[in-house]
Length: 224
Image (cartoon, rainbow, N blue to C red):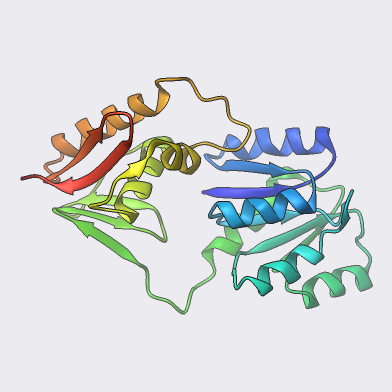
């Protein structure tokens, strides 16, 4: 899961990022509206946690921006502006939930999970290649119906590759899919994730391979 945290208070942002990361959530942090707008245009997020009082304006304006570019992303407004009129305004503007400060991190996590459990009108999208199936909604990988036990980053690598199966995915695009904006990336970290993923797919008999193109990137294809 990838979440965009729009919060300008450094200590609050750091504490929330650390707490969310412990639950296998990749957190992209945006301290301003400008950076938040850039983030949603450059990366796919499963949810947004949005502060209202930001240095360059009211966070509620991001909801208007999301509608203007036809992006439907669950948004939890997180703010000290917790009066009834403030909550009504946020919900009427398109927020999915509203949590007033101070709050418990456990409650925020529960609300994020609840948002992502809401039924969709669209059937789950399943990407298939060889004997591999990948549920793009639940992010579950299976080979011949048997679930693959993949750590978070290997799962994110596989998702990025199967979304573009048969096409080369640049290293830079894979790194963006796997790491948050603020993550420090070791030079060979991505290659290590790919190597372990490649072995697990082979051991499971998926009939697919992760093919490396030196200096360019990787592609997921059926075995010849």
